[in-house]
Image (cartoon, rainbow, N blue to C red; front, side):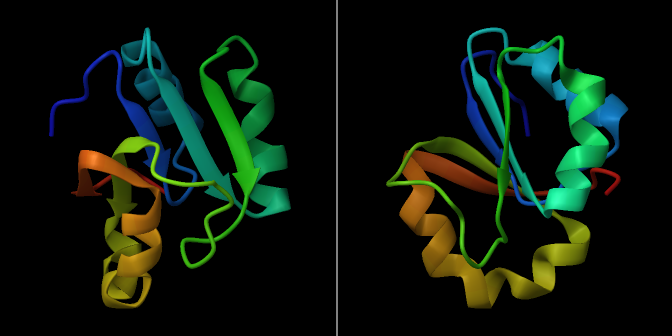
Length: 108
């Protein structure tokens, strides 16, 4: 799954800070939106203050706090794959036309 520098990425869980930073560096002209609990966000946010292209939102994969289709890629970590049948409509709601849902092995 190649990530382009202009992708608009949604992560359904917060991975390790090193992985977040690596993704943010690839997205030179793109955006990285990560959803998680308030506690997860508070733990991850301080290590990414240098990146202007990273946004944290409180939410869950079943209720993504985003209006309309905007993401070119949605990354689903392995531990959430079992939810795909239940959250498919929600993912499609925020996926841009031609976008893709990608299963990933990010360390969460």
